[in-house]
Image (cartoon, rainbow, N blue to C red; front, side):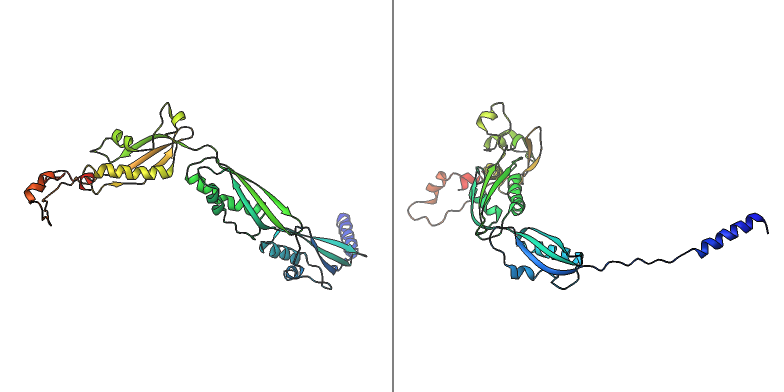
Length: 313
């Protein structure tokens, strides 16, 4: 056996004989000495109902996972603006006090909305869907405000903004909410174009509409402001224009809105004109004082004439 091998074998044996198995004693988890609830306001807390959501109690082993579950359960009630938990280590660390800190969401006592113009303050309040006595805070208002923003966007206001202040009575836990609306700039119309019109020119159709496209003087007259309700009323005017020309089955489609330059939009209105109706035979019944031959010349429509709705009426 070589000298090098003997040396290696001796070191291996020494190393093997020197191996020692060690075990480290793990400290026992602390025991909960007390569970306290701290009210951070506003108004009183219903401690009994809160403890129904807390799984840990005095005398049980502290479990951080259980505390996290308790916090989530309390948050999901919607009654609190904030929920947190803290520990106070007692003695040698074998006991802890568990402290839950909660802040009530105040209950709504009054609400006032100012600043609504194109959308009324009452309508904005309805969109917020807030009832007296309902719990409210910044988080709740931020969520409800999305309904208002969506309503404004449908009316093509591009930068509406809601701000609010919540004044809380710390004793009663009641809140007065003041909401201010800044509607911001509104989209204007750049062009109005028609599709499917053959017997009536686009220029003629645009002239019967109250909505107008951009003109150099539009910044004074505001005639090109986008207004969904006005555009819907214009569809009736366009339909009537065609019906007065005998297109009794005309269909004026929903306007298609696309982005234009700047804060402007393009409006495209599809039209299905349908056939032109004419008057066929006309019968007159119930005459007692006059002969039919005397009445017929006074009729506004005669057989073969275009069936104009205006004349028929």
